[in-house]
Each structure stands twice: as structure tokens, then as C-alpha cells.
Length: 366
Length: 68
Image 1 (cartoon, helix red, strand yellow):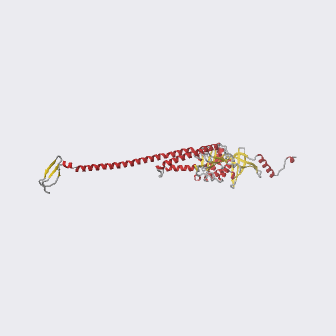
Image 2: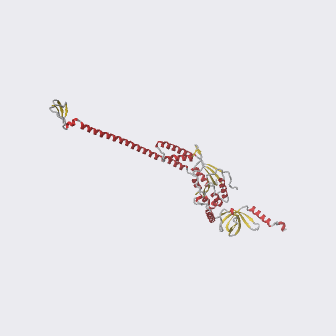
Image 3: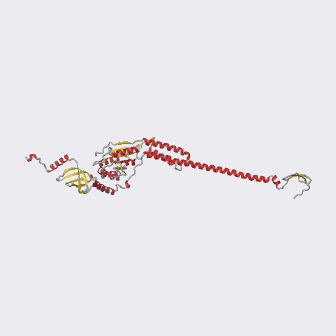
């Protein structure tokens, strides 16, 4: 009776059936616990136990699935499929994991930061400048997020004529890093590359923002052909994606302010610059006026000098003429003789005061 | 950047910069300063009109990123 009610399996079949049952019942589970006995074998396989006060489960994953560093004692959440191995050991095959709780998130962040920093991913020499007036940009964000709405509003307020290609992706959760990576690859492979790739996400909890501390995502940002601008969270939040980007924005709104200039500011500056040439022109006019005045004054001075010189000459000539005036000579006591100067001639002698008529009685040459 | 009257706003701003710089250069002469100023003023007004009227072209790409 027993045999007819209970099916008989081979060990292999029973393991296979158990796995089928598990897969049907729990195709994907998330389990939270503390990491213990963490180890990496042959640089490929990752083993650790996930435990809490009441139990422990062995976990397995590959190194390339390990996107955030972990170590013993850290609290994590694994996304996994339960499995019974062919040796009868129950384990979780982990597809993804993420640190859980502030302490673990911080620890994981610091471990990866130190690792990538050592590789030079965050060094200032790698940073490229963004174009001052881009014409074509790409944006990677969730189009439903408030941060995205802020970004679009600000670029529309500040600037125009910009071509903006938007990749709608998840910006939190397990799938977010891969979606952002795919979007980065997509824009980097376009025939016409955008001039900047902007990755934005508004504020959130440390867990929400942890997608931006994913190792593969950080590396993808660091190696992007197109310069990157990353604005994640609030001003005080720091993500590794921020650090790997060419330019870091404090928030999505700040990213918009960085990427495009403010047209009102440009208009104000333009008006100011055009008006600023007026003083130069006025100064040049004033300078010409002064120069002209000086030239006229010099001409006037020259004329005055000539007139003065002529006046002086006239005075001098007048003095000479005065000296030559016969009346002046007569006044000095001389006399003017008219008539033939020979003995017996009648002559007229003019003095200053009289005209004297006389007869020449003697004439001797000196 | 959107083309307008065969020149981009960037090109117009560059032209305006050159016009303004002329006033501080050794080429400055009072005889043509007024013409240059009028030219700069007209260009600045044109750039202002262009800047105020331009709209951004925002497009969500069709590519889906939630699948490998």
C-alpha cells in the first residue's frame, strides 16, 4: 500500500523534481541576511553564507555578478533562485545582491570607492570639459521622475534650439544599473554622437541611490566616449557614478544649469557689452575734440604771433621814419638850404622856427 | 544649435564679440565707429530675438533598455 501511494524516485530524479518544484514555487526570491564565510575561488566563483539569528543558507554566484563589494558582517539582500545541489545541499544561486541598511551601504560604497580610486577612475586628469554651448545632448533618466521634470523645465527656461535624446530607464532597483549601462552603450554607439550624456536622478534614500554605486555602471561612465555629466540625488549625496563622471552636478536641476547657459543672462551680458563700447566712442570723440581745439589754438597762436611781429615791425619802421622826418632834424637845430650854393646867389634857409632868405657872400669847399 | 538666417546663434555671438572687440583694438577709427555700433546693436537685437524664440527638441528614444 505504501509503495502505491508514495512515488519512488532515483536520487537524481528527486533532486531534479525538487528543483522544479522550487523553481515553480520561488522562481526568484529576495533574502536578507548577514554575510559570513565570504570567499572567491579561482577569481571566478563567489561563495558565502547568508545568516540571521535563526539560520544560515549557502550562496553561490559568479564574480561578474558581484557588482558591489561585500565582506563578512555586512547585511545584504540577495536576489536568487533556491536550488538543491546534486550533493543534496540547499543553496541560493544569486543573480544580484545589494547592501542593506545604512552601515552596509556605506561600507560597500567605501570598499568600491577605494578600489576604483586606486585604478585612477576618479582622477582629475581623466576629466573632460563639456562644450560651452552644446547642440545635441543625451539624457538618461526615468521620464516619470521628478528630477527629470526639473531638468527639462530648467533647460527649456534657460536655453533653446537644443536637440535632446532621452533614454527612459529605471533609476532605482536591481535592474537600474544594467538599464543605464545599456542606455550609455546605445548613445555611445550612435552614428551621430551626442556632445554630452547626462545621467540624472532625483533624491532618494541611500538604498534608492545605490544603483549609482554599481561597479559596472561606474566603469561604463568612466569609459564613455562621450563626455558625461551626472547629477544624482541631493547636494549632499555622493555616488561613485558622480565621481567617475567628467562633470558632477549636485542635483538634476544643477545639471541643467551646467549643461546650458541662461539665455536671459546672455541677453543681459550682450546688451551690456554693446553699450560698453559707447564710452570708448565718446572718449574718442572727446579726444578728437580736444585735439581739434588744440590745433585751432596753435593756428590762432601762430596768427597772433605773426600779427605781433608785424606790429613790432611797423613800430620800428615808424621810429625810423620819425628819425628821418626833416622837421625833427630841423628841431634839433639843423637848417635846410635851398638855392644855388655859390657866391652872390640868393638862398633860402629853413630852420625849425623860420625861413631865412640870404645872399651867399663866401663859399669855400672843405 | 538651430540655424537662423544661415548663421547659428553661436556664430552670431562670435561676430558680435568681434564687433565689440574692434572698439578696443588699434583698428578703431571714429569715422566708422558709428556704423560698427549700429551693426553691433542690430546683431544683438537679432540674437536676442533668436534666443527668445528658440525651443528645444526633446525626444524619448524608441529603444527599450529593460531587455538585454
